[in-house]
Length: 271
Length: 271
DNA sequence: CCGATTCAATGGTATTACCATAGAACATTT
DNA sequence: AAATGTTCTATGGTAATACCATTGAATCGG
Image (cartoon, each protein chain N blue to C red):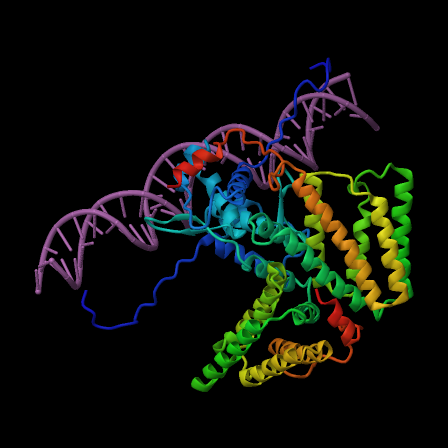
């Protein structure tokens, strides 16, 4: 064909149908048209409505599920349900970055110290009596749990985590809380899965009490010192968990390889 | 059937095949068995190797792609390629949280001020001459770009962003950098997409120069002031982009993300 | 009324066929 | 021989169909 003219035809940009579908549903969630707990039409219905195949719909749903926008239940009365986004997405992202080696445990610790210190100092100037009460209540709660049970591992006293999250909450800043929660969630799940060692919750709690007292003095320097000591103590346990686990830091559990190939064979094929 | 015995048969837990596949490939990436740029077998080959259908494989690839572990190219010599994880995952997560309304622009701004302030203070005590040189080089680079072009919108001087990221880099902490980058990336793409207004890059650059000078004085208090003014200025532009007018300015005076330490003590504490 | 059974809606998997894309290999022309 | 155009082919993208698995609801039987 002769090049008589130019730019008469707009080039066709073929975006992947599943991407378009996922994008469309995301927008509906953003706009509020789809709210948490809402149920999407069944895969078959969606396919018909979108003039597409069921598999295309499924791929879109897989993506949305992976990003945490929906969760899927099988069976009658099942389907895809819109889910309220929470901090797990952040935790997932952070976990990947660490597992893939882009972020070291040292960096995690330092970042947490930096951010949590900033949080504490930000809170210090405006903390209310009610908030102080909440902290105290948290400490007492942990105390009673420790008195009842044997209080062996840290997982048995999950309330200990809340102490830190409480501080983040006091900033009234959801994003700071997401960041902190991601770092904390990784740490706990890491310790739990890799090496459930004994972390002396009582000592842990004691340090919380120290921090609490420091906050009441409203002395920023002292607060920072106490908090840092506490966090570096936790970090030390992370390190112990790492080195005490047969040098397989990231092999979390044996997955069921059932009908799948061993990794080496897949690797071979990828030449 | 009579209940003669119990617990003889292990209940079958049917995990979704695509999940198992995705998990397996992820583990191979974590372990280094699959490195960036490596190419996975074709969908058809994978299906055969895994004793599963091609659609199942595709769903797994969709998930991995959504999480940023692979990218997929169509055509001959195409396929699924392992991708080095970068900050885009964090940006994506943050963007979702904001778009869905879990995090407000105000919170974004405050969090950025909190974190970037902490970063700056952390850097202040240990910044080297070479690092100062890098900052200066960045400023000069932006300058020359501004002199050449008309310098209308901020997107034409992307180097302006690097100034902030440079500071984060000096902390030697990848995670803090990821956090900061996510916040910055959202802001820029938000302004660009929602309302590409003129942001006076020259004024922007001037403030960078101010910050640079402040850093050289190594006065934490002064540094913080200058940085905060700069960041709240940026935030104001975000608001303008959103509302299209300057009618709802930030009440900068109310925000108390500042630290309470006197300068000398902060200097001492710099990690 | 209650327990067991069946039913039906929905997601999960597999197979097949064909289209779309993009490099590579090949052929043609200069 | 080099440049250019064409065809080939491996690969992802989409669709349609069939059937399995799961799970809550509806139904049936006592």
